[in-house]
Image (cartoon, rainbow, N blue to C red; front, side):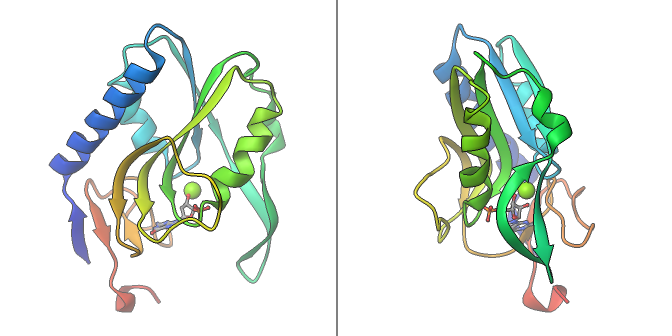
Length: 174
Ligand code: 5GP
Ligand code: MG
């Protein structure tokens, strides 16, 4: 495992991203919608750097799977669809933008709930990402196309709780 982004670098990148978010929403109120579970560390750190009236909601996205492959679009867990985003400024927060499928599927579903605006923020964006025609509005770091863990991101339930971000070597993924 090799360290990709140290704790200090993470703190600095998140501070910069929070500054951009603060500037964008200055004087408005915000609803942060975090995608479980990878975004929880980012949501926790981000909200403490924002000086705005804000609400936090968490959603779980799921898809029908066959042999680990996602069939069809991601859907928001229905129980969580009841939160009030109508007329609110929504910032969708996720851990990583890889193929982009997650945000591509979730943004229209949240849009249907009638928010005043919808933007997205991710901690990480992969260099060779993007099978879709959208990009996140706020990005912490652009990283090489490696499988990363730590700071909320796991591999088979391990490493979520690493305080820094690391890339796994192929032989560490079985
Ligand atoms: P998408 O491909 O839809 O942009 O990203 C889907 C999800 O795949 C992310 O929210 C994240 O949970 C997972 N993912 C993508 N790349 C990585 C990675 O490098 N490491 C880990 N741990 N998860 C990843
Ligand atoms: Mg995720």
